[in-house]
Structure formats: C-alpha cells, structure tokens
Length: 608
Image (cartoon, rainbow, N blue to C red):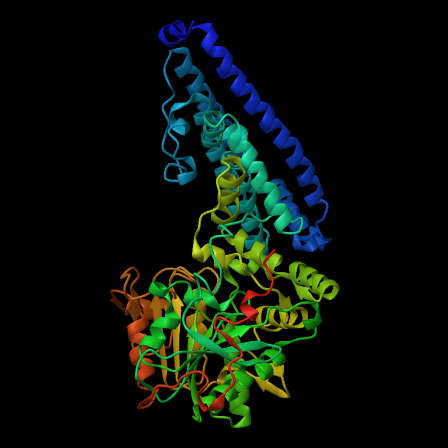
C-alpha cells in the first residue's frame, strides 16, 4: 500500500492530504467567525463624528448637478456625443474580446493609461480575457468621468476644482484592484495559501479597527518595529526645559568647538520632531551637531481636550518666546538662529513679526523649511479649505476640544489616496501582508492632535483669510504681517511638495521685508526633500541670486546643483553664527536635566 502510494499517487495518498486541507479550512472558518465578531464589536466603538468631515456639502452636489443639466439643455448634442463615444468604445472592446475568444485566441491588450500603473503589473491584466476586459472597461469609464468633469461649464474655479478632486476619488475607489473578485494578485495569493491570506487580511482589518477606535485607517508601518529613543530618535541629548507646551532638548556636542550663536529648531506640531532624527545616517539633527553647532530642538506637547482654548498666541508666548529665552539663558547669548518647519515656519513668521513690534532682536536669522505664509492659492488643499469642511471642523472641535489626529491623517492620505489608502489596504486586507518595517511611514502614522482654538485660527485666519500676507493677523495686541519680518531669511522649499507647494512658498518669501533673503529649491517632496543627507547624493537642488518676481522666472534662470542642500545651507548659517567657542554640554552651569532625549512628550498618545 505504501509502495503504491509512492509510485502512482494512488487514491489512498489523497485521503490524508484531503483531510489536512479540510482541517485547515475548518480552522480558517473558525478564525473567520471569531474575527467577524471582533470586527463588529470594533466597528461599534466608532465615536460620533460630524458628517461634514466625510464629504462636501449638498450645496456642491447641487451646483455640479445644476451645471451639468444646464449644459445638457443648452448643448444636448455634446452630451449625446460623449455618451455615444463611451458606449461605442465599451461595446467595441467587448466585441473584440468575443471575436478573439471565438477564434481560440487571447485578446490583444492595447496600451492605455494603466500600462505603467504598478497596480496592473500582473500579466493576467493583459493575457486573461476576464481581467483584460475589466481593466479596459475601468480605463474607459475613468476617462469618461474625467472628460465629463473637465468639460463641465458653469462652475466657479474652486467649485470646479473640488468636483474634479472628488471625481478623482471616485475613480480611485472603483479601481478593480480594490476588490477581491477583480484583483488577480489577491485571488492567486488566496489559492496559493489555501485561504490563509484572507484570514490574515481579516485579522489585519480587525486590528486596524480596534487600534483606531472604530475608524478605518490602514496601518502603514509595523507598529512593533520601532520605539522612539531605542532605534529611532536616538541622537544623544537632554531635556533641559519643560512647560505645558513643549520640552526643550539640548543635544550633546560632538566637536570640541561650536559656533557662538546657538541654533533652535521648531518642528511642526502636526507630527512629531523625530522625522529629523529617524536614524543616524539620515538624521539632520545629528548632522547639524557634527558641524559644530549648539543645537536645541522643541518637542511639542500632544494636546488633549484640556487644551481646547489653546491658540496661536499660546504657541507663540509659551512656545517660541519661552524656548528662545531659555536658549539665551543656557548659552549666555543675546541672539539665536531659528528654524521653522511647515506650520512651525508659518508661526515663526508670526513670532518674528511680534518681536519686531516689541523691539526684540533675539532672532539673528531664520530658516524656513517648506513654509507657507501666502495662502492666496490653496492648491491641492482647496477641497478641504472651503466653508463646509471648516464649519464641520469647528463643530467637531467644539465637541471634542481638539482636532483628533485621525482627521488630519485621513485628509493628508486622501491627497495621495492610491498610495496611502487603497494600496496599503489591498496589501494588508486582501493579500494578508504585514505592514513593512519602514521608519518614515511609522513616523507618518504617529500623529498628534491639534488644539481646537488653534486649529480654527489657522484655518480661518491664515488658510482662508490669507491675513499674514494680507492685512495682518491680530494676535497678542498687535497686527502681525510679513512686512514686519526683517531678519535674514533662508527658505528651503521642495519641488514636488503637495502640502506646501514651492511656488506658494516662494511667493510668500517675496513679500517679507527682509533685505537678506535666500531661496533654495530641493528636488523631491515635503519630507524626502528636507531629510536629504549629503551621503545619499540622491536629490539635487536649485539656487539663484535674489528672491523676487515670479517663481517660474526664478526657476528658469536658476542653477541646478547635484546633491543635498544641507552643506549649502550650512555655509549660509556659518556666516551668521559667530566665532567658535568651547562646546556647551547639557547641564552646564547647573542647569537641571529633566530627561534624556528624546524626552517624554514625544512618546505621549498614539495616532488614531
């Protein structure tokens, strides 16, 4: 019997294999049942959220619908032509597939906009009749939607932009790769693993619902792969000051001599500061210390509902001004050089305008990383900066006291939904893959809340009202504007930044009153363009004399430079940092050490 089984694979050999397969199937079914119960329970914990945060108001739908029907009535031929063209292409593709199959051939896949899309890289999208048909029908449908919206008349600019954005979201949502029955990668994986990938995918889905309090937000990076202070954010330093808004970290020197003027970095409080210190080889923090600077970095408090009434004035007074005074006291210097990143750069400009009004010359120079100060063009954020969404945010923060990090994460993710929502969801929930151990994505998921008052001030006064570049922002008894910013400025923007577009950053710098202005344009985006160490030699940068006129003209006559902008900026900073003095260490002069870097505030709370 044993010999027969080995020689001819007889029926008796199939019994144990079939039994094992049945056992695995039953085990997986039991897991699915248990996971389904957990899923229902997790979804039931979803906190109530304002419906206005989930989509545009009905007013936009009415405007789009009215414009569409008005166009149809005025020019019915155009509508019929568009519909006939779509139907004709769809039917033609269907008939070609049928004819090829009738002749015993595989349909020939024509090149289309999806040819280079990695989502459709599986050969079955081109060789299998079913998947080829689905792919081409999706391409045709997507193009039909885009053309219909593009040719829609009767909508104002911002309304048109919003309709285009939400139409693109519909197109991304209905990609066949997002659904199990039309995703060959997921189907193949399920067959190969005898359904285990689906069970693992369901486990991942349940985990995300449970982790995010009933909200669905795909986990982008392995949450257990990193620990701040252990394998990321490890540059040696100490917390030397703490208040309700921040911890001030002083980093240990690595050179015997340092520049006389200290440097302080204000990172954005939308995320945490350790993006500048992910690991030693790409840490801007360590690189600055190694160049011979006394470096201080602010780590912001992750606010809870008790910070509901905390506004921009609190960030300025108890944040910027308090930190600058501490740095001056610790180093014995009268001035500091300051860096502001993103929203922290915007608020640094408010702080410098206030200091100008008060006659305070504590800031010697300022560096701005991907900073917006002129919001006259809202760019990709236009869909989220209109009254319906901002009204909903105001209602939500009135209820919660803070704008939960979940809403910020979701907003940024939808700007790149294919890469940050649907792609990770497919890999995690349909393929059953574990999220990668990727430090940058781990940081990206480690979001922070925003105080209710501050969020409203920023959205209403700066983003919608454009008051910093316009008539001024009323804060702390003064009207603050860019014309009050007079210190030397070095602004670094990033070429493909979709959060702070470089042309908008450039336009803001031209409106500052500083006589000494430098503008550097780095290749890449909002994070990679800044975290761009010289050792990688990956992204170059553009430079030009002067900062005036139009951004396009500046770039047209700019010089491209290979490699990172860090050394160029450091040369600029050196000229404004004084002579060399003996290195300063945390705790010098009896200053109390409150905690080792990266401190306690950075570890508070988890993003949801």
